[in-house]
Length: 284
Image (cartoon, rainbow, N blue to C red):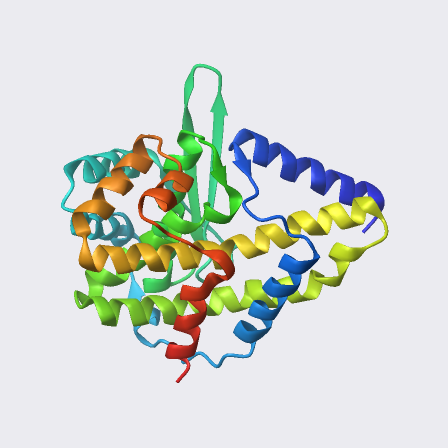
């Protein structure tokens, strides 16, 4: 990459951070990056069993209604009504350029008009994994529609949590749902962990522009690990205190920051201890 490319990447990243009112929770100094690297190294070496269940075929017309039925776990009409309206307005578009089980959320916004969304999914045969990807993208909608001051490390927490409720609807049993959710999600997290390891040294570049670019990329990869840790703690709480989690999801839709959710639910994602525990368990 040329220096101009690094500068363009920095500019785009900082524009997104500004628009979405995001900030860094972590310092990403030498000490933190080294600890995160060690976590990523452990995760990258874990052998994750393959899920057969998540490869079951589904039809496109099932994607939206199944997601809406999955929301019934919250027993909250506000959440259901909100997403019912969103699914009516958000177009689902097939894209031949997307890899299997990949999905992208695009949005446009302007002064005086509502944010408009589109979700792109693969053009080929869809599976349960695509249902989860759709739920993930729907989980991003509230924080994009109403930006609020949030740590970048928490921005994937609600979307990942929404993946879990798809599995909970399918399996009913919370432990079975968690296992199938993790078999799908942990593979993606391994990819993020390996990418973190690849750019680790670049964060120490003597060129300040190259260093800053990779600092941003490092944080952008790590947000998935820390957000999954956050989501796992939400899942734990859902199993013991559904009403509180339901109330917090409603509050997020209305504009509450995930920072405040973490504070109110006593969620601590430092070094992803909850996530590391699941990697050890699922690989046995």
